[in-house]
Image (cartoon, rainbow, N blue to C red; front, top):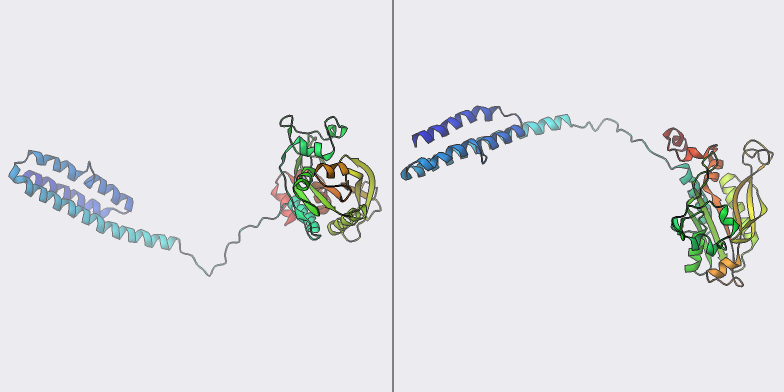
Length: 343
């Protein structure tokens, strides 16, 4: 018994200065494990109780409990002091002077393509159109068949399509969205459909394999080519200035009849001829036309009762014209030095 009590006194004597000098909560926890843990100093001493006579064990157990309680109390007291010191040091270190001016976070800006999409859609939203979207991985049926472009049609060869399978592809235009809408919605219909499209083009200053289009569609009773011209004239004036004019040239698209390429008078020279318009005074901007009766009928809309027009605007071409960008590749390189100009 005397030997066990002496061992406990020795443990307490070694513990006292170590506890007094513990400077962090981590050091205090290490002391708790070393002296009071399952393999700690107190536990090692208590293993000798089995060698004591039975009549001495209660006193030995009481002495061991007193030693444990004394160590726990000392650790708790030291921990309270250290925690207070650490808290005071942290508050001093993290103190904020609310009278100092704040640090302004750098603000980003909308990408020029996003700006162009928002501006174009804004023109037509103001005319009562709504925005419609469709899948970029599209069925051949919607991308070609229902747009009056069956298998073997020469227009397919000019699309340079990325096929996923025989019947699934990456859409080459946003026109499939108009078919999906006409299938599920009865006229009157007025929608614009912005989105990415894909064609196997060689990437250069004016071409990309991934680009953006905005499809427009209006279907109702009595819609004429005059309505199309008026809508596109408004688009051109809102985007390029009030003095802008448009010009329609005959063209062929399988899903519109009649069809036209639409040019916009050069916003730089006003139609006199310059480097931007290559001396012609006009810049080709989009394709348009009256929705082909076969397309209407294929979507369950009677072409004898309803008519409509559609147009497809190239967003990259509009953004380049709108913001004076000469190389399309700059729109995709995410160079902050380029993008910061559009704040």
